[in-house]
Image (cartoon, rainbow, N blue to C red; front, side):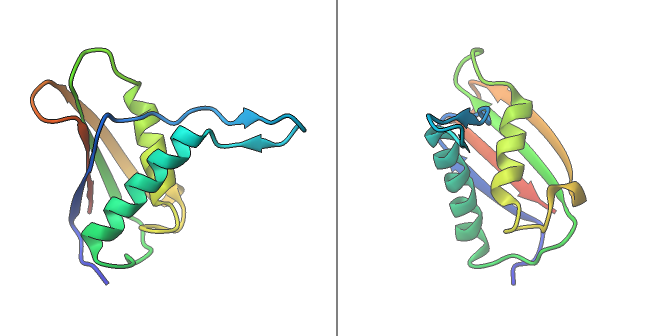
Length: 116
C-alpha cells in the first residue's frame, strides 16, 4: 500500500472529459479518446504507486501544463482525472476534495496530479 502524498505526471496534451455519445441502437458510450485518456491517468497512478492504493477520502490537486493558450476547459480535465481514479485511489469521488490549476508554456504538456 502506498503512502500519501503521491505525485505523478501524465505526459502529453491534457484532454477534457467529453460528453457520452449515443450509439446507433440507443445505447450510450464513452468516446474512445476520453476512454484512452482515463486509462493513461489510471496507469500513471498505478505506476507511481507501485500497486493498488488504499481507498480513502483524499484531496486531489491537478495542475495542467499547456503549450498554448488554446486548451480544453480545466474543469473537464479535472472531471476526467477524478473519474479515472475512482475505484483506484478512492471509492467514490464524492469523498474527494479537489483543486485544479494550469500554466501555459512553462513546462512540457501534461497533467501533474497530487493525491494527499
